[in-house]
Amino acid sequence: MEPLREIDVGELMQDRRIGRLHVLTFCLCMAILFVDGLDYSSVNVAAPALLRAFGAERSAMGFMFSMGFTGILIGSVIFGIVGDKYGRKTGAVLGVLAYSVPALLSVFATSFNELTIYRLFTGLGIGGVIPNIVALLSETAPKRYRVTFVMAVFIGYSMGNAAIGQVAAWLIPEYGWQIVFLVAGISGLGLSAVLILFLPESIPFLAATKPESPRLRALVARMAPELAIGPQTRFTFRRPAKETTFSLSLLFDGYRRVATPIIWLAFLAESMTYLTLSAWFVVLLEGVGLSVMQAALAYSYAQVGAIVAILMVARLFDRFGPVVSVFSACTAVAAIIALGLPGLTPVSITAIAIVALACGSATHQSLIGMVGNFYPTIVRGNGVGYATGMGRIGAILGPAFAGYLLTRLPIPNVLIFIAVPDLVVAVACLGLARFAREARARQPVA
Image (tube, rainbow, N blue to C red; front, side, top):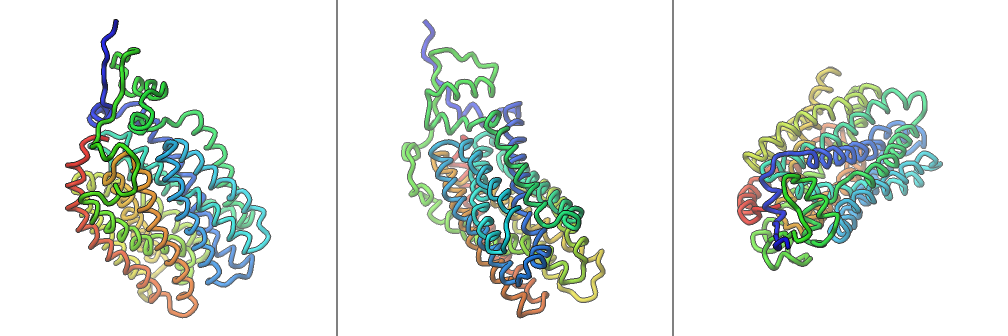
């Protein structure tokens, strides 16, 4: 009779080479974020067309942005809880459906208020996929590639943003603002079917919550085909005793008592810069001298620049930690303020705008890539959900206040308002560098 054998999946996974299961998980998560980017940016690139079509004021557009971010805030918390209770895959699939269906309904909106309501519901899914993807990748990637995996997957998000910018530039003049929502909605419904069939669940999550699951046995066999897994093989996921059951107090346990509030502050401030800039980007560029098409294309090019910035920061982040975000945040601040300088040519405006949004995006994704490492598996989805949820509070306040300011102040003054919160992020990341070292020491496994 085969002797009882125990395998700790945390130890098994942390030092493995990248294999097929890693690649599959990464690519499907990238696809989720690609469509998420299509959906998130659809309203941003359609903003000028929507203002003209419905005869709305900029302040009303700011309210629409804020309602979308309100949905993202609620969704990041709700779907974080779903992911921690029912699995990362379930949370991700439901999130994709939650942002795809309202996007399709937006095509048929007959009033600005109706479209605003759809953006609220779309936000639930947009926010909901983030904590589940971050948790899934943090628990799947080998330890030395963990932040790189989480940050690099957001290339998909930037690609989605870039793609919808191209759709807006070339197709809105012919088909109207509805085309961007149609593209996003149909893409999401198709993707959800693919995810149900092929997206793997988190192995550490299954080991922590369903150690006898046949699905866990099959996934471990795929992850480590060299292992001889027999009927007597048992899977465990070792961690401190107090981290075996769900409790929100774990968000504030030990060093996290200080680290979690700093993380929340960083997310709050960073979102007031990046997500406000992203929301108003096309309108702001029109205001400083670009045409409608030039502004939409600049948004697309800036998202391509974001891919380069994310890749650079990701590898540096794995080596040097949160201090890397200090540089990207300060560069974003300088570029945003520079957009308000007088006498800039369209080429100069486009180049500066690319740097501003690319560095803002890299800072944004570095925070998301970092946060999962501060929390144990049992509350990782909640940890990411609450952190990104705090960021959405900034995203609710920032675009609405920027819309108000745009009706009363010159654009250079509004750009200063948008840029300054990223200085808070830089200071917060200096503080988080210390706690990141402690997090690595206390969490040697996935």
